[in-house]
Structure formats: structure tokens, C-alpha cells
Length: 289
Image (cartoon, rainbow, N blue to C red):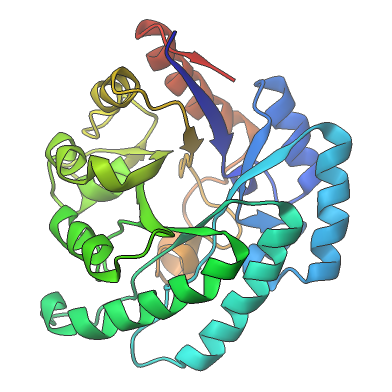
């Protein structure tokens, strides 16, 4: 039987870990892609705090599917040495939380530049990060996203081939490809051999609005069916983005004013996202845990 594991960016429910786990339990989800927790971004969590978080998770039977880190969400001109110090602490936190994966990005590009002119710089920095993660047995998963170097499927493929490390792979986000005006199925076909993890986020091509899975142009049902037909039984991680939440403006590289009018993300909106995904899985006869 085809089967997948469900996980979620639970900070879109609430920043409090206990509340996150309470809501996830109502949906039968026991994995978290940890990005925001107890009032902090995961990059700000100390090792000591991670130890306490792990105790909370263990007590409730939760596990971490990946760390939703902000690594690589800086400009190339920014202080990379300081960024590496943050990354080094994240590696220690990941070790405590027993996270096999860490989501990363490939640096914001200045407006109007030719992304390809910066390929060498980007690859050098990402290779250095992958080498830092190697002793921890942590796989870095590059996420495609608008405004960064690796926004398109072709540049994502170039990155994974150029970095050429066993612990540097891809996370596939269909909504982000929609927002970059790509056909998501074509992007999947190009990248599937290098993808180890899938985000469940959908968007409408007409205006880039994020919507529940199946309501946009991400072709999520077709992609989920294809990956499970090919034997994938790993994580589908819900990243609803159906409302404003702590850190959303920084995450999207926006001004706070740009998101101030959005309704707050909460347990109700998260429930809409879960229901939409489970409907797709049920229709395709794919079991989940």
C-alpha cells in the first residue's frame, strides 16, 4: 500500500510548542518541521533550550522531520561568517532534536541582476555549508523559492549537481514554483531524482495567492500520486501560509506593512490545510501517519 508521513510547520498554528502539539494531535500528525517555537525562530534557539524542547517532544511522542531554518536567506553581500556561526549552532540544535534534515536556501538576489552571474559564489558557499553539516550526518535540503538564486527548476538542478555532496539534496515546494511561473509537473520531472522531501503548499498562478492544496495550480494531487507510485514513502510537510504568523514578513522578505492586513494564521486555518491534503490522499488511496 502507498503510504506517506505527514509533518507540518506548526508555528502557523501558534508559537507555543504545547499548543502546536495539542492541535497536531487532533489531526493525527506526530512530526514537526520546526521553524518557530516558544516565541523564537529555530535559528535563535540555544542548545540548552533545545534539550528542554526535546523533553517536551518526547513526552508527547513527537519527532522532528526537519529544521525549517533560515540558512541562506541573506544576500551575498551580507556577513557570511556571522551566518555560518548561526548555522553552526543550528547543527548542534539539530543534533539534540535528532533531526536528519535541515531546510536551507541559496541567497537572495538583488533586483534586476542576472542570477547566473552569481552561480560560482552561491555554489562555493553552499558547498562550505554542506561540508560543515557532514560530521553531523545532517542532509541539507535546498528549497526552491522566489527571489533567491535557486528559484527555477533548472537552477535547482544546477545547484545540486554543482555542489555534488551526498548531504545536499532538494526539498520540492510546488507553490514556490507556481510563483516563479513554472509548470510544477515539469519541474518535478526534472528534479525528482534529487528530491528527498516535499512541502505541501499550493498557489494560484494568476495572482500568486497561496491556497489550500488542490485549490491552486501546483498540481499537488498529480505530484503526490506520481511520487508514491514511484515508491516514495517519506514526508509531506504542510506549510499552509493561509494567514499571517510570527516571522512571516521576514520569511517572505517583505515589509511588515505588506502582511499587516492578512488575517492571523491559527488552528482553524491550519485545519483547512490538513483537510485539503487528506482529501487528496484519500482520493488517491494513499495512507498516511
